[in-house]
Length: 284
Image (cartoon, rainbow, N blue to C red; front, side, top):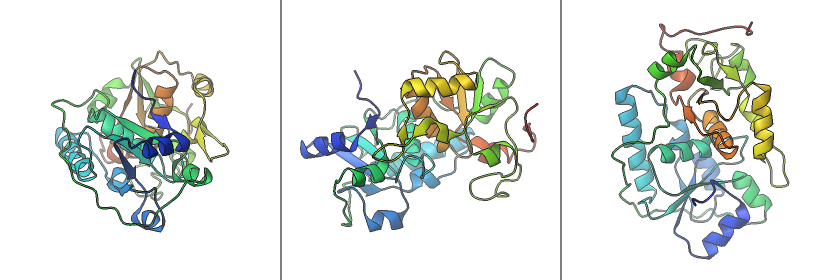
């Protein structure tokens, strides 16, 4: 049985002390990393910043960039990758984006520090400012990636089908007041993909003594039910660039959804294609 995706600070501390082969990957910006990171963690900010497209060329570039990036961080296939951000609701799902990318690349052992660096510190565990130079490895590039990515053409084909399109962006993006988290006019068009349901990504998390954490599977299923979504439905997720949707991907998989995929290019790509349809305003 595979390890669960989420690992608590106490569990990670135990594995570290037991000498498990781990590569800790800090997805925060370099300044936050320099001010304090988990001991021996490697900083890989590109997990969050890289903007992908879903063309054949774009997906090939995505594979190449992250095979090199994860290899330079020390992932050879023998180590467990443990990704973290600051906290689960402040980093726009960046640690989960790393998890999704590694899952797409069929890396065998990937976990997410539940609650992030904030939870680690709240548990009284040490941080470090020492620079870390990882031993580079050859990343095990698969012959074929996992069937987790949806292209813009597949998203277009899913309109008016039985597939649930789930938009998890912030409310100002959903109603078309803003085009992105980077600014209202960062992308050329505002709105949403026609027919998409909406659950703001924050709703799948709740407060805890260690900071924001994912809700229980039952609570996640209840939130989905309010939007008319069943765990039996095939679900295609999107946000702006696949980070917040990665957070939701983890939540839905934890809740037992069997068929969840992501349009990783998301609104950043869709909005830049004038021929692709959009909806604006409030749904009818």
